[in-house]
Image (cartoon, rainbow, N blue to C red; front, side):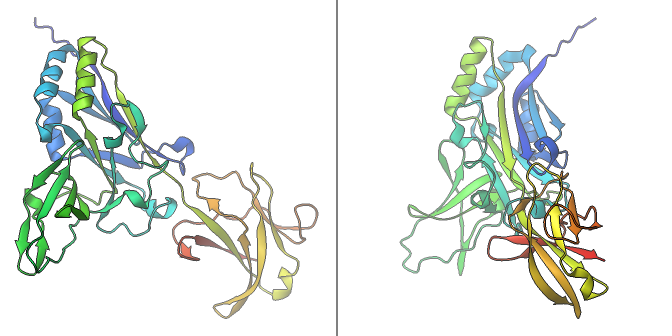
Amino acid sequence: MINLKFQYKQFFSIKINHNYYPGGISNDFYFVPTRRTVKLIDKMSMLVRNAEGEIRILFDASRMDLLQHRLKNSNDSESKFSFMIFSNNQYFVNITDIPVDLKDKVFYCSNKNLGVTKTGALHSDEFIGAEDLYNTVPQELELNADGNTEYKLKLQNGEAQENMPVIDIENGFQVDVNELLDGHYKIFGNDNELSSFINVESKTKGSPIGFVDIFLNKNLKQEMLNEIDENELKAFNYNINFNSRSIYWKYIVVPTYLKRVKELAISSQKGKEKLTFKSTGEETINDKKTLTFISTELVKFKKFYEYEIQLRKKEGDGGGKTVIKKMSYAPFDLLKPINQKDYMSEIYVYI
């Protein structure tokens, strides 16, 4: 009998945190490796394991010589693992503190700036933001009439920039993405950066919200080779953090008779940080007079709240008659802009 022994250990992991969800963890997110990465994982005899908002790449610890050989002899296309991020939550944009327009755009994350650090976020700030958002369609640029500009397309591969082919057309500038590896590209006119984009492989099912590159640069590979020699290869644990969107809550009280809303107030009875609301007076909505209240501070979206919001007949938190003991929380399916950066959600209350 042939005894086959496999002992898989973690090579690296990427975990998504989103503080809308309890504990920051949710199975609404999942990773899909690019086709090139699938081939690379197979070539390196590795395994892929998905958990709640996390992907793990495992290596066969019983074949360290194979991993060592691959690390020593990998070319540029074999020196990075690339993944697309998807969300099952149709309201991802609403609940997340990000730009609302994601058409033909993805958030780009990489370990380029982490060096050989084994843990850390794959983005520069605490949370993913507008600065991490890139186009997936190359911008068409006008060529300089003097003909003296040298245009270059460069792949960001972790430690250098690789020149790639560019197609010049009669009335502009176009990139043939079908000839490119997946990843982050920059377009230069001489030495000036003109634009950048993320090449997401074609025929991808669904619309990814993010693209991740894990680069095995020269220093990182040398660090791993040294650890293999000492028989103590340590796993890398990366994370991607999304922040929940904060909005104003606006309650619109729709009475049967206007006199019933006199001296009404909204108060927060529970929660570690109680919400406060101010009256914004009467408004006419659909030819009906209403009384409106808006939160004095921005409120962060959460899947579960501790608040108990009451509509009371008397001003203040104490005394008076309770008209509605527990009112609905702000919905996230429809947000209304207040200014260029703030949004509100409306809650209708019928009495």
